[in-house]
Image 1 (cartoon, rainbow, N blue to C red):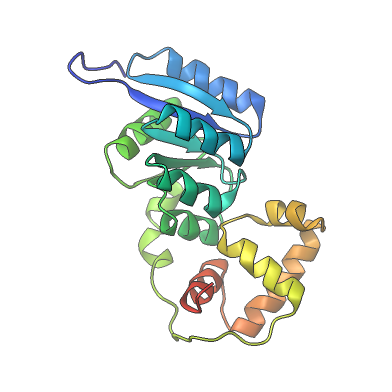
Image 2 (image 1 turned 90 degrees about the vertical axis):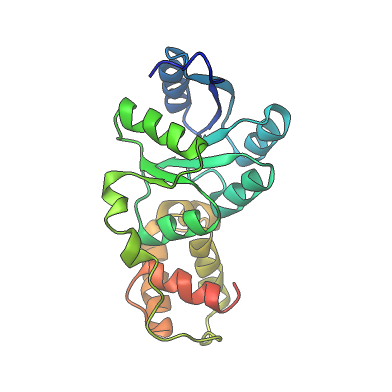
Length: 212
C-alpha cells in the first residue's frame, strides 16, 4: 500500500522476542512508503523506551512481551497497539482489548492483513483477525453471575490467575513461574472449578469484576 502524498506515513515500532519475526516485519514495511519503522525491541522495557523516544503511531507487539502491563504502559505513552501473536486464547483477547489494544491478529496473517491492521489501528479503529472477529461479541459478554468476591485460592492459584488476567498464554505463565505447561493447565482446571466458570475468558472477567 503506497502512501498518499498528502498524508504522513504511519510510524511504527516493532516489538517481538524473535529476531526473525522482527526483521521480517521491518523488511516488509520498509518496502512500502505508507509505513516508517522507527525502532524495534525484543523486550517490554526497551519497547516502552522506544515509544517514549520515538512517539510512534502504532506499536506492533507480541503478547508474550509483557502482556497487559506492556499494553497499558504503551497506551499511557500515547501510542496505539496492535497485538501480533500466536496466542488465541479467549482470555488473552479479552485482556488485551480491555487494556487498550486496538487490534489483535495472528502471526500467520498475510502481509496484506497485517498492513491493513496497522492502518486501521493507526486510524483509531478496532481491528481483529478473522478467527477473532466472530467471537468478539460472545467473549465480551459478562459472566452470568456477578460476584464481588472470589473463593479461597492458594497462593500459587492466585499467581496463575493474576498472570491469566494479564493476558498471558499458558506457555508464558509457565515460563514466568518456572513451571511445566501441564502444571499450569492443572492449576487452571482447579481455578475454573473454584470460580465455577467454564472458560479462561469468564475467569478473567470474574477476576476483574472482583477488582483484580
